[in-house]
Amino acid sequence: MINFARVMAVDSDVIILDEVTSALSYEAEVLVKNAIEKVSKNKICIIIAHRLSTIKDCDEIIVMKNGEIIEYGKHEELIKKQSEYYKLINGDRGPGL
Image (tube, rainbow, N blue to C red):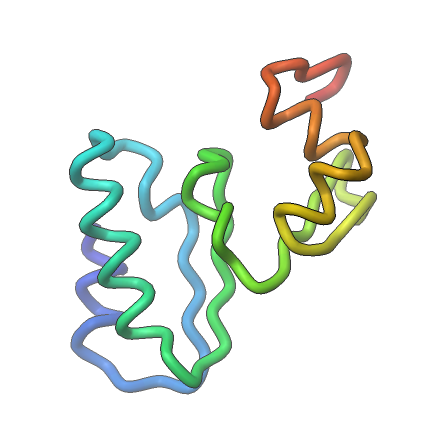
């Protein structure tokens, strides 16, 4: 949360958030997601997250496995593919995830 506080305090063109919602309750996550939306307007925002609800509304989602990009796109596009992202959303983590 301290890193997120820095984002709020410093005006930067690029924002990188790593697991910013991982230890939060659902209610706190919603508040942080709303704040991210406000501070990231007209900026490049990279969000690293295992909590899929944190990234669902992102412009582009990149799915990685074993250090490799295996798919990317919007939430709806990735769901239609029924590939790794779809498996993660539906709780089927499979081997190595």
